[in-house]
Length: 166
Image (cartoon, rainbow, N blue to C red):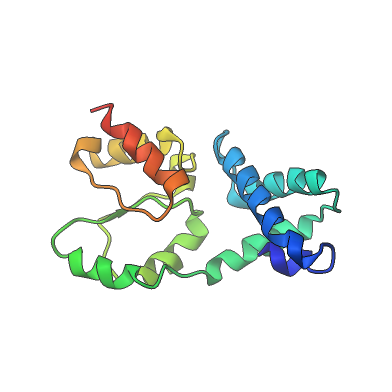
């Protein structure tokens, strides 16, 4: 996302490092109180520009938010989910807003037993409060679940800690 709106303000060779810094700033933001993702993007992009000495434009964060509905799942995910969906009740805990979830889940190509967004839980992963919200809704605990994700930082670490609470 950043490579598009930063192309006129930064050397191409600096863009990967800028994106890493923005990623760290977004991660830091999700560790605080829940906020709508559009606000989270603004509040993480602003300090990234401050570090890089560039001009922060709120329109940049807005355009980054607007592109989210165009994303799809990793290529191998729909086939894998559809293979197990008949045998294992699937639950999805995305860091998504309610307004994006129907389209995103539709692209996964499998039926879900339950969907709990960060907006519903009022917490972004990796915060434990989001996982606890899901357990409360389902009436179960971490010992009853298996967690699968592609994100080490936002989900695997928390999911690993959950096993110690059993």
